[in-house]
Amino acid sequence: MDCPRCQGLMIEIDLREVSTRDRVLGWRCLLCGETTDSGIEANRMSHGQPSQNRARVPGAPTAKSWKDSVR
Ligand SMILES: [Zn+2]
Image 1: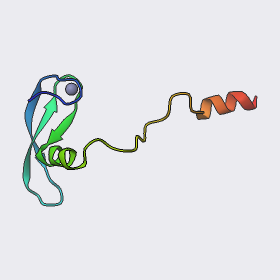
Image 2 (image 1 turned 60 degrees about the vertical axis):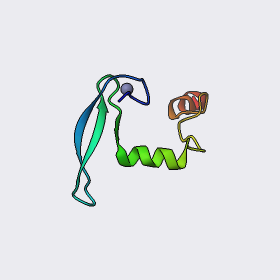
Image 3 (image 1 turned 180 degrees about the vertical axis):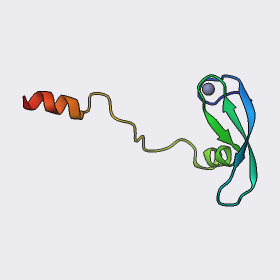
């Protein structure tokens, strides 16, 4: 299994599903730490790419730049 983010080597890990208390087999990337399991993969397949990116927009004002502009 290759990491979906960096194509690094992923190792199998045991995840504990809190809601069901089932043991779920997952994978963790040795390079970037990405963790995934069969449920997450199924969600990705059914939803596709997220339509809205919540990441901060580059160039958007931050608390620091706002303080600097006030001064
Ligand atoms: Zn990775």
